[in-house]
Amino acid sequence: MLVSALCLLALMSPLLHGGDYSRGKYDPDNAYDAPIPGWVGPAGEGGVPLPDEYGNPTVNIGNYINPVFVGWAYYYDEEGTIYPGVAYEPSVEGYYWPWSEPVMAEGPLFPYINDVCSLGGYAPGQDTAEVEPGYITLYFRKPVRDVPGADLVVFENAIFSESELGEDGGDPGEGIGGVFAELAYVEVSSDGVHFARFPSVSLTEAAYGPNGSLDPTNVYNLAGKHVNNQGECWGTPFDLASLRQEDLTYLDDEDIERQVDINNIRYIRIVDIPGDGSRLDSLGNSIYDPYPTNIYNEGTGGFDLDAIGVIGQERGFYDWSGTTAMNPLDDDDGDGVVNLLEYAFDMNPAAPDAGNLPRMQLVDGKPQLSFRRDVRNSDITYVLEATDSLSPVAWYEVARVEAFSDPVVSLPGLEATTSAESRHTQATLGVWQTVSFTDLSADTTRFYRVRIDWVDAQ
Ligand SMILES: [Ca+2]
Ligand SMILES: [Ca+2]
Ligand SMILES: [Ca+2]
Ligand SMILES: [Ca+2]
Image 1 (spheres, helix red, strand yellow):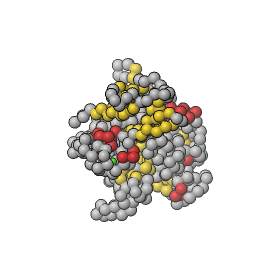
Image 2 (cartoon, protein in one colour; image 1 turned 180 degrees about the horizontal axis):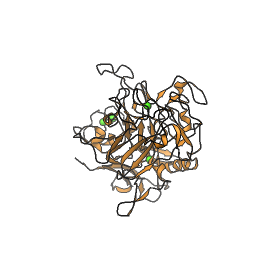
Image 3 (cartoon, rainbow, N blue to C red; image 1 turned 60 degrees about the vertical axis):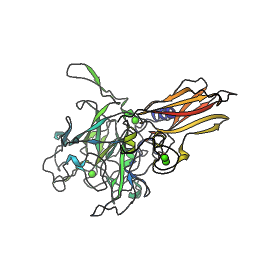
Image 4 (cartoon, protein in one colour; image 1 turned 120 degrees about the vertical axis):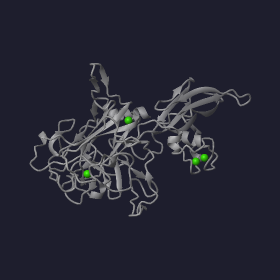
């Protein structure tokens, strides 16, 4: 299932599909770039629990940061020292605090508006060809790698505009036209020196001044097109797989050929785009966004980075639990499922949900065993075992499933498939899978079980 979905994406190349790319918010079925909600929960996807002056949420109460994120990008290490290789260079100096502090762009999302770091602006009459656009480089504390679907999500502070809708008109709140969006290129690197830029599309037809808005359905793979403001929080997904068509090789200092390794990304660089049309997308089209910008008032006339969420990264039991105090063999919620199995089968350790355990059913008359998993679970192996009799019982291995990999089957007649039709709500996500094994052999009595082997990394 997964393989066919990826082939489909390759056939419908994301280039040249103006009007088909995602809206400024909630567009879950958009296969190109459905935005990822930064917050999820009982108040709905994307709803930010904005706090009052005492820090208590006033709206979207009960929402929490999207658990699909397992890491964030950083400028400082845990001791407050700047990481080697990171950098922050706004296009002009002299910004007002606090819009020029990299600390505002690192780490997780916060439920405040505009805790961002601006990359700068461009004055009227300034020759943008002569200007070095602002940029910021951040570090990933663990390597980021290509997983099914989006791997990285960039949050700017784009806002719905009340005026000057895109060509197609529409209600600003629908997110079709009318997004005040400040765009940026996104680049990734394994060594902090050599960067690969995500291929992008911008089909906005003309420049539109400092206060105009654009239609995000004409923009693809540029950060900043999704709304993150006014209590709505949506980020732009980036899939490292989209770099596979790019030339990722370079020569290092000793003339040895190296690669930006999409399974070992340690740096991300966000490069602001002066929106006068002087900068181009991957097809050679001019990119337009608000221009000229007022660089002297608020000093945030360029891209404003809020946070970069990581999806494509390994995780373990204690990353998932959020605490080393959780015992993997306890059953905290009393649903008969120990915490380690809740983790393995992508369940909720705080709510009874034994219905999400592995299940056996007949599909076209053939027995099929299915279970849910998170492909990033790196400290466990799923071992599928069978026995032909329960008396006497003699379990033998028939398949195993490792992190980031497709199932490996060792029994003839057993067929494995994976599907992203799990609990994802966004078409651009793929880490939560359903793994299925179908026994195609006829007239056989066979019993199955799933064994979880855990390596405690503590
Ligand atoms: Ca990916
Ligand atoms: Ca902005
Ligand atoms: Ca339990
Ligand atoms: Ca549970």
